Length: 344
Image (tube, rainbow, N blue to C red):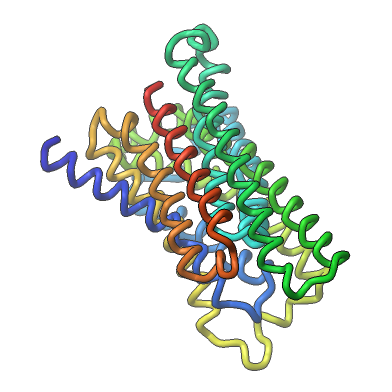
């Protein structure tokens, strides 16, 4: 691997660390409700930053949109909206089951589905080739990893609550974990749609290149409508909760630290920054970008989220058996991502 590819690999890992760590500030913002934090984060991560980067890196960005077929823009936005629904569920899922399990389950599903479904639609003849077989096997391994993570999460909830909770309350905790698990699985099904925006938005990137955008920055034209449409889904649910829970006042509540606003902005910077850094790294790796870059990115996110989850006390009070199930599930999910990478 030459020096450029090595630098690309480091950038891919850095992007994964940023993405895996983006939700950490939420843990220190307990006086805000979920909807307060998620709305501010979404504004920066899905609207302001993609637009700023797009305008800066794609010459005549809005002319590029005008010259691209409306059907392409609509497809990019539609898939972006579907991803936005998955993103909303992502935030709800990690708030219920924690960063460690949430990232593992959701990203474990996102990796194979993000590759398998576009292959089935665009190249159905390749489904029964070695490429398709790797994706199917990877999806099967993902299911095993999710089962292990689910066992770990259920055991953790019982162990953390057993000393203080009575039987009825313990039942509610199990029900709460089950709801969180289902939310994570739904997010894992919807989240790959951001990759569909990229896959089916090639006419938009071609138009960006014709306008003078570089090969590595042309994708920034896609993120503007895709993430913007995704923001609509996130914002709609946040606005609903703000009204239902009457938590608008929490933005200006007495004693609310200004650091909460900075924390939400930092979440947006880390999340979108991770995407941008990954894109630069994958491009620098050349042909290795698609083979090693994407699975390394996903695996780094999972490991980062689990390490930070452990550091911030998500597994406090859990037994060694619960932790073992969790790490075994993570190892299985990382193995699945490796198998999926062999399909490239």
